[in-house]
Image 1 (tube, rainbow over the protein chains, first blue to last red):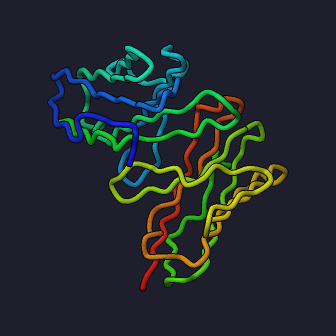
Image 2: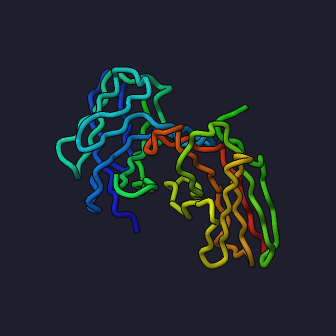
Image 3: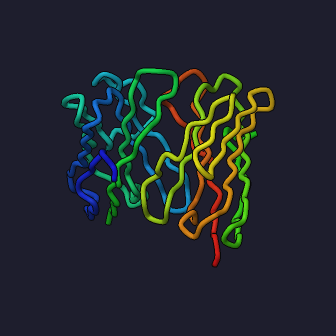
Length: 114
Length: 111
């Protein structure tokens, strides 16, 4: 019963398309994250937003463009993707209080680039 | 040395068995440590944070040894529903939000 929601659940897009992935959390968390997970691999961090500001970009290609409109929402804009970008895209959120930033994941968007 | 290393698995155990997972990490500056479980084609779910004093949640016990840079997870009286991939997760140095995931160890609990 995740409190992090993601839409759409599945997305098929061509290499010339522009699409967006959306994430929303209702836990009052002030940090939000995008991860990419390929089959049989662990999640890999892409971006971190803290207090709605981009704090970490793990050298992600510019065809992925994150946006944080407010503390509850996180978007990932996709443009001119490649077939190798097909993966499960996971959003997570965490509090920034205390010593341990436990991250809670949404169900993910399964992306196929054709 | 890889940033986070786990037993390769898979672990196939009967119901009721006790199973232990081990994990080592390379960065002594890491501050936060977690175990997540991930079911096939689902998102990772936080199982527990791991503290130096050790912590227990029902059948699950996690231990952290900072000197050895070693983390463990013990599952007692395993259930069929424990079948999943268990991911050891460590923060990247001093950046607590930047998590590094181990490759995971697959557990199958059989009747």
